[in-house]
Image 1 (cartoon, rainbow, N blue to C red):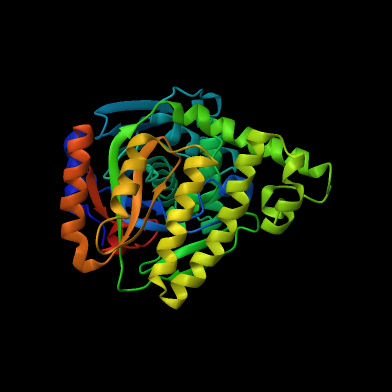
Image 2 (cartoon, one colour):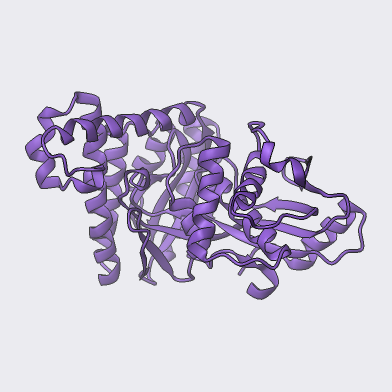
Length: 392
């Protein structure tokens, strides 16, 4: 169930805007990706779950012809006149995700009217749990709901992705927004990022998914993300000289990669190796989940992390410590980094009976090593975006 009660955010909205209006409240969840990291912008497979942690938008009409947004989390307010949305420019902060969504709606000739919006999120920022996509999708469904406009779920996900890539300027794949829209309780979402089809994969009931926030986020993350995108494109270019039918690393099987890898420059070769084998790991992980094979699921978790650590080079000392320590603890089947990299969270497969010891032992070891106390999140799969009152 959603973590924020409808009445709480409604009262906060009324207090801030000094209004007796009855706002509608919409939510969109964060996500944790179980496996399939950085494969989405390579048109491969990903395997996320939506989380109960969500971004909430309370919205009601305003009479001033402007979008007036207040972020409770940043204690920051922002206004833009509706007629000025088309000419808006990024500011480099949270408002880019709101304005970017509004701009994409305008581009599709979906009417935007003046509105007051109160935004509150319990998805931790910088954790790798996709707070930005949760904000984008919750903004989209709120603005659509206010106008009584309808878009298909996939169109909402794609619109939110465009807001991030074209306005906020982050070259992300579709996974985060897709998971925020299509989340389902009890199941992971195996997404084909080329066809944009998906299937739900029920997860074994005798395992808990626990995310661990390292409480660090290195600034290298954004620039390195762009660099990894370019390096993957370089690998594709090299492989195309051998086989012109290859359009993305999704088209390269592990067997074919072994044949052609020496023709790829060293660094792009490393990046391609991660993507090619990570796609295979997603397929294998889904099969293991359906079979309830927890040891195999854990083995694939660790293999994925080592690939990100050594081939994709997006881990960091603190994340590696969390993974290396976790996999030695009783009741832990596997651990890996999740998200963009260079900090954020790990995701762990833990026996439910071992969670208390897992959190105590890992938290103590991490605090002793780095002087930081990690935060633990229960990450059972939750439903996707919608109007909060309809989901309670």
